[in-house]
Length: 114
Length: 139
Image (cartoon, rainbow over all chains, first blue to last red; front, side, top):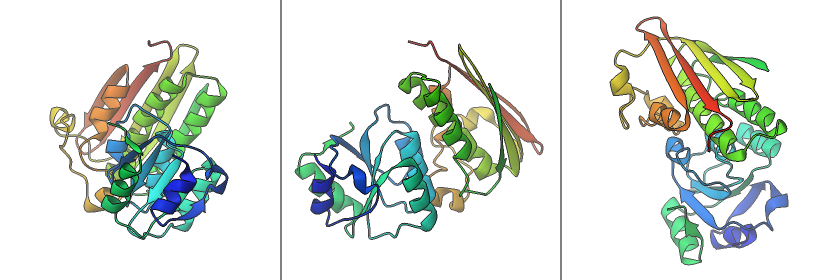
């Protein structure tokens, strides 16, 4: 699925990594617990989270997940934004809940990591 | 190649900086991406542990053609019961740590899973040293 499609489905706004908007991603993982994300053996997935702090961007970096969908209308802090730009992580923010984002994207064909 | 990084307890804005630097170095050296991921996940969890539990610490990283040795020395409360600390789900983390997306008792088990060797030396009231070895040639 194209990142641009994901952005549209979740009524989102791209706040970082705009150059990646026409890239494709096949898998997603939703969690507010970064240690759970770090147990994944796959890479190149989109991380769906409501955790709006710099560690969600760091975790995306360590997990080789270049895309992050921030739910529940959370704002992206300046330090998150600076790090995301430095490591070229695309961040989409959505006003929808994590459950709604995940449900809509699953219904549209985005696959679960497991 | 030898690297050292200082880590301050409680400073979550900097947590992950050393892991990020090591990741960049291993990429530049052309290491296997799967091995790089194991290294940075183990190191990042260990780095977060210092920030979450200790007063301060130092990360020593030694990269050789055969692998990487990471030594994380901290000044902190130490671990009273290593067996409990290694149990998935057991945690003594503060609410602040949990708000950062950690502290669910996954850190040490996750480090162990990614490492070829993990040694924990700890003294209650003094601190903890983790030694993590990851070989580059593991199939």
